[in-house]
Length: 88
Image (cartoon, rainbow, N blue to C red; front, side):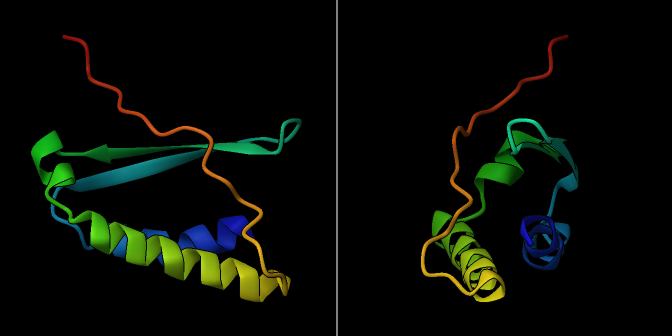
């Protein structure tokens, strides 16, 4: 359900954003946790996306999950968000 919602909601939205270069999803079966790496052409393009827009997509994602699982609380919690910078 989570992966389907990622592909149905986040992937199409991200693919339309200027500077988006792709993403990788890693799944830890034992911990039942995912790591998502999103690659951008540069930080300026990434940071130019309004948080309000990101929050709207997140809400759409959560609504999709809740509806698919027929539950009231999102079971997929964000544990950590951060940035990686390329070392030269």
